[in-house]
Amino acid sequence: NAGVTQTPKFQVLKTGQSMTLQCAQDMNHEYMSWYRQDPGMGLRLIHYSVGAGITDQGEVPNGYNVSRSTTEDFPLRLLSAAPSQTSVYFCASSYSGQYSSYEQYFGPGTRLTVT
Amino acid sequence: KNQVEQSPQSLIILEGKNCTLQCNYTVSPFSNLRWYKQDTGRGPVSLTIMTFSENTKSNGRYTATLDADTKQSSLHITASQLSDSASYICVVSALGYGNKLVFGAGTILRVKS
Image (tube, one colour):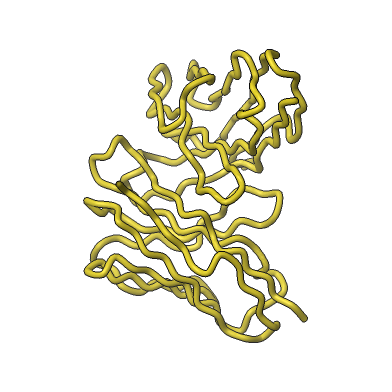
């Protein structure tokens, strides 16, 4: 199993550009989520999905869109990039929701810089 | 406000020594507490998950403790190795709080030879 994969690993955008961060998992996990990690702060939840066709907002959803058309894929779209979105983005998946004891598996991350 | 505070922010120890990392939380109602290891440039990897009824859990040289009464947890690393150099993140899950995990900012551990 490849686990959770993310592409690209690095990306530089200009302010106002849009892009999609890709995330895929091959463990047949129901639950997938996107986080951002900023220096000196804990990971913060952007959006999550409890299954194909179902998505919901997390703690910091503004400026981001998601969709979940298949169990395997959960792309994150930046609509109009801003310097405040410079961060490292992690995708994660698990068998069930976050308040269960199921382990969350994280991808390797995408380091995004917006100039 | 649900929060997770970790201490120290960073720590340097010599190879072979033991160390203990601390985690205090105010998350309520409590569901479970997790410790993750995050190597530089990689995603977090789970070390332990503890529920309310568990007060100690080990994973090799890593031992986590939980005191749900005082809302404190610790991660003890025994006989440290250079490969233990990483950020260690404490994460607390709240029941009925919109499926939210509350992440600490992490403790950066550096093991020197």
